[in-house]
Image (cartoon, rainbow, N blue to C red; front, top):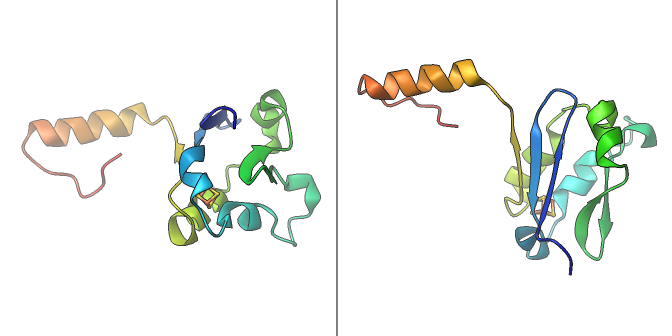
Length: 113
Ligand code: SF4
């Protein structure tokens, strides 16, 4: 097997990261099914299985230019039915500052990034 991490950036600046070691142990590959919702059509498909692991159907450049629509369907499906292999992180510096400020004041935020 190749790399154990598949990581790419979307047009909105999200970092999508697949921990492929977790994907190896995943029974459902739910992210692929979520990515191939019939009503979206093949033009919006991003992922395919290669050697049992999620793989990109487009170059990282094409994805950065808008092939990924930031729908987060893959992450949701993975968290609900997969093995926790994919995480999506949006850069939100103001939110991070706000959460840090709460913690400095001794307030434990319910939401933690
Ligand atoms: S559903 Fe999650 S753990 Fe399973 S293959 Fe997809 S990203 Fe990996």
